[in-house]
Length: 553
Image (tube, rainbow, N blue to C red; front, side, top):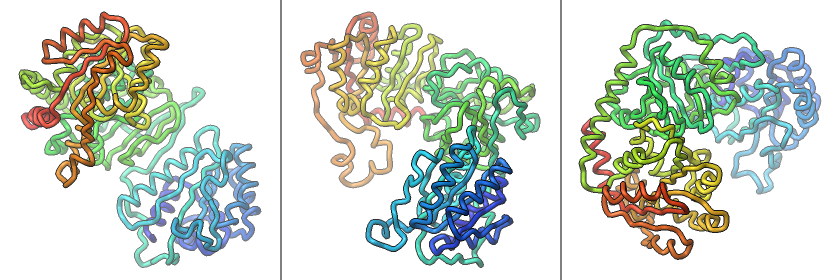
């Protein structure tokens, strides 16, 4: 517990917060005592209602967050009047309420009430921390919570954030073990906003670095293609383009679309070590890219977005810049000459692309080859809706928009669920001329009822159904080697989807081979109504071919 709370308090210190108002109590013991060990200006105010307004006054004058600390129970309730005023006045406060651990809630334990979201809509941001654990990952996690909360307090309009902190006995810290430096990043977190024409500069001298990376994550409606490509050309860095960023439809040798497969080879990480990362858009599909970012945990990781929304499951962001992407790109004026790092990525992509083409000769129907055939036959400006699970991962690995048809990829990546995919794609088809859906059998089954709307409202859509007989994605995961794997995870359903032709009055085809698929797909995209092409896949063979591509590389 000691260094978990120490990491929390140290991160507040590193962010430049100096004023802490404490209302004494038992459950808040570790917070109060460890704050006293840091370099803070502390104030004791016995009554929490008074303490809240006292902190508000300091924050109002300074224009920066002040910390409030209290014990559990009704102590937290007494902050509400000051929290309400701070919210209305747009004053930044960080409220740290101590709480009973989960096992002492709703059982009549003293000073235990429901403190979750106790301030409701008066706070900009609320989080409840995990119970303390002395572990490096937990130290990094709690620092990230503080960074995220600080950013929310300071992002315009400024306001209140609330962090609820459950704590178990014993509550007295072990000061002989206290080390504020544990899990400190090499680079202190920086939050900046570029707005209303304000001058902006980032403390990164790009001229010193040759190995930068631009990541373009999910952003289906973005309009900063040209500016990001121009930035990559100025800095001589690769653009790792998630399929849902739609950068793969753009012309630039700097766009790397094979990174997911390249980064499956961890032996190459040292060669590709970066000095900094600039991230546009939201999350990205690739797990190997996540692993590579963790490998680069000591670099500047700069997230750029027009509003604050922390997206980094690796807890890696060191600089969050609230700015329009185009404006950020245009403000960086370095023109570097060394292309050696960029050339590494370009050469790796060239080699990997050749591997894909070599393996394409296999006669077994393989998802990668199907995607290449779809890419070849799709019309200009097609809306390519892709389901989650294996479908989007195969598109990540094998889709490149080789023919530059401005194919726009769409996917429900917010919560990454497999439900509602058919309905979402049919919604797109209502407002777009050419729509293609790539979906797995379980995702398709989850939303079969969605097909009904196509009969009620009409729809022109091609659905490519990849049927591997169940949860084929689980064959890629560690549990595939455990007992009861097939029963628990593969979910073999045995559904005959051909009956949908009668049930929903759609056009159905069962694909025999690649030639049949290409002919049927080209015919389907020229046809009206719902056209369902079902392709049977051997998931074991699919894994073998996928590994053949990456291992050959």
